[in-house]
Length: 125
Picture 1 (cartoon, rainbow, N blue to C red):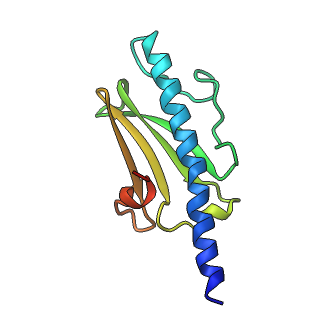
Picture 2 (picture 1 turned 180 degrees about the horizontal axis):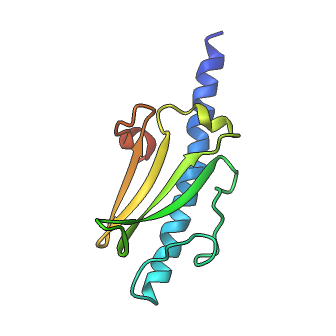
């Protein structure tokens, strides 16, 4: 009885690697794109030729511009949120994981089910 919840929690933490990997791929692709253009790409599938789902289909991926008004000239936010059909929807600790690039600075962020910062728990350091 005690082992099953602990096992499920470890599986949930392990599936976060799917988001970390996908967001890292986006970061690298964006830097390659930016090296040849004046702004970051604004679309995953048509510009970067990347899927909007993580490799193991646990997360849906998206891009948005930064600052006000939102622009891809200064940076971007790449987000990963659990897919509704994945077991990862039960991950209350990391409901949203993201990488934000602002003026060359890379920030690793995460939010829990209450929309509170959970970056330390979600991004291994």
